[in-house]
Length: 287
Image (cartoon, rainbow, N blue to C red; front, side):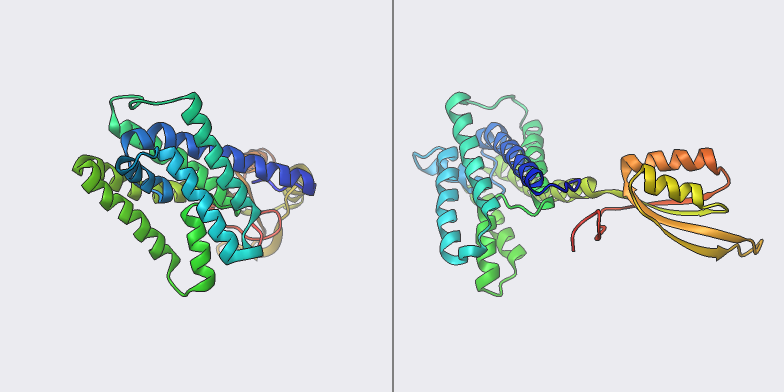
């Protein structure tokens, strides 16, 4: 997320992103996961199984379980329990309640379970990736992970994976092998979607520019693009001519502008451009 200097605007932007992300997760869960009984992904994964075995709807069970986990979070984590997690959990519950009351579903939207599985994975996956990228949590089983991280030495990733696997295995017995296999595919695809979306959000371009005259390029980087650069001297191995190397990193939109500027002003410059999705420092990810 582009950094905002004003703390009030930054807070507003963060909570707006959390709201949009949780509503996206709620939509993917309610419209595509619940009607097809797909059982993967924490509390929402178990909710379809519980709904089939009890009189509770999947949306109601998800909301109840999330609220209960919130209380556990306050009890075991105290002040370490983030308000963003509380807010995200409440937005998720509110979103499911709104969809269930105003858009009741009696059957699946389409008759293509594979197509609906894609949306059941993709929409919540995008929402989760955006939340992770700004340091927020969607609640649910993430709260269990936070408690275990503080009070035990258990491997959190393993514990959460076991919870997801348990939901998938139970779907085989409750809904049959077809739904169980779809849930298994969804579980595998979920982590891939989250990882790839986070990488795409943070993707930046790293430039190594070897040129004769660095001044106009550096001036453009600093004054037009608002970035900075590191400059150092080098020597050509064959010609032994003195060269200047400019090292800079920027977002993709800025990278296109810089590349076009260099082509116009110094067409003989040699440019190496690489991708990076994890850059830590001022103007990028915090330490």
